[in-house]
Image (cartoon, rainbow, N blue to C red; front, side, top):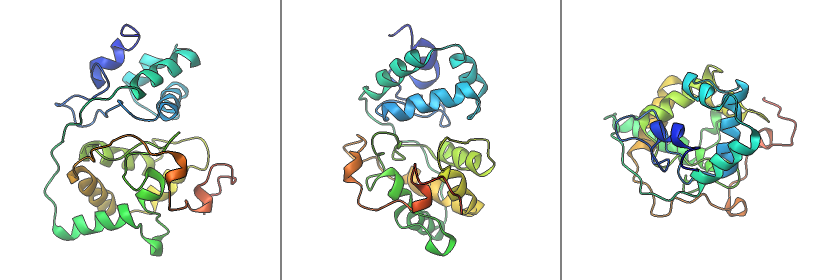
Length: 210
């Protein structure tokens, strides 16, 4: 397995812990295995774009991708705090508002409604936001807004990101990056979510984007 993940480790760290010198390379360790496998498949199919990732996975079988995903999901290593930019207090308040409560006036659900009250993700498919860098969060939200990143199913992140302004994106990224990771970074079980998702964002409901 170490040989199989050697190409991954060169960017993401030997155990998927991320690299301290590159804030745009995400941590893989501890994320839900089904989510990691889905993202690898997305790079392979062209639904998600990154030249190096597309090259690494282009000839791998689904079983190979599953094994890689399960390996990194099982890794438990400490989190590193990444530097967050200094932003105005009003922007931090806006970021927390969107993360915790969303913006009903714009039809933006809270980040917590999908990614868990602890923001550590929800099994089996929802990744955590806690512990991610400002640069990575900002880049991914921008990718959703510009359709550089797409997903199977209802595509709710494309909808949500496009209901956010550029200032909203920066505020959310800054607030999330400034928060210390919780002691328990495991994704929570699916049944532990208390806040229901909007109907248009639930897989199986037809994927209607209002």
